[in-house]
Amino acid sequence: MNCKLLRASALLLLFIAISSAQTLREKAFKTGVMIGAAVNVHYLSEAAYASTLSREFNMLEPEDAMKWEALRPDEKTFDFGDADRIVEFARTHDMKVRGHNLLWGSHNPDWLTRGRYSSQKLSTLLHDHITRVVNHFSNKVFAWDVVNEAFDEKGKLRDSIWYNQPGIGAVGTAYIEQAFRWAYEAEPHTLLFYNEAEAEELNPKSDAIYAMLQDFRKRGVPINGVGFQMHIYNLTPDFASITANFARFSKLGIQIHITEMDVALPVTENGNVKDSADLARQAEIYAGIVKICLQTPGCTAIQTWGVTDKYSWLGWATHQTKGAGLLFDRQYHPKPAYEALEQALNKQPLQQN
Ligand code: XIL
Image (cartoon, rainbow, N blue to C red):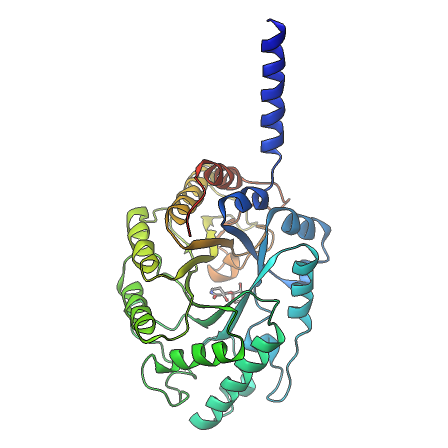
């Protein structure tokens, strides 16, 4: 081998070494799409958790610490302790924070759900909550899930304390609209999202959300984006349907965030993957979703619902039958899904938002 060729090969090897040493957040930064993870305050003190989180992700979202249940021990009190600790971690590590969430029919404190409040009182409570919480985190939270999971799989509004049991006194989607207006009043610079489960594909639920957002956009209701949770429980997501669904929301001129992605695999009682071939399929799914996001104008964030398979809500959500849905295994080793996601980020051109 002559000298020039030798030097060129050495340079090429160096280039490969440097680029493969890049973390997800560095790769994601180049695409203009943020890469996030849901965070539980209890694990921040675990060195491997904290270092993986800060090394690989440039965005985070408190998994539970900003829900009513966590922030509101009683009617008069706001407890921002855990949420503040997570936000401080993000600040220290130059990460953006998504807020989750201001209004949901679930994970509300007992004093609220059992309080037999009148519509008028509930309306005041919600208005105060949104104002106080959005103000507390203004300049710290760049995007809020204002409303979470308001629709059922048939596209009907779910019964909830805020909607109709007894509700805040607003008919149909007007209660959702009201929450967005209050959030905007509190802080007009924060991005306001509607977040939903199982609305990634074209289906009655995503149709209903689409109709609502189309109406909101037409009438100037302050909304900046839609969050698709992307909890995937079977290994056969319909990529074409997701692509088409993302495209129609994108055309409304709003942003899209993938907010809670995990790809659940069948696991043994110890949480180990039953069939190692599933790991390859999981990797394909992560890559496929990243590809769709990068091809959709306005898709600006991809977030996984946790950091490591060691700590994931999936066991709880599936009676311990499924798990291992994330990018890092229980020992914090990157999984095939990590490599696939990294490759997918690599291949894509810089997107135009
Ligand atoms: C889950 C958390 O991961 C759990 O820790 C908690 O016990 C229940 O809530 N959709 C959402 C999230 O919007 O807030 C949920 O998070 C998962 C489903």
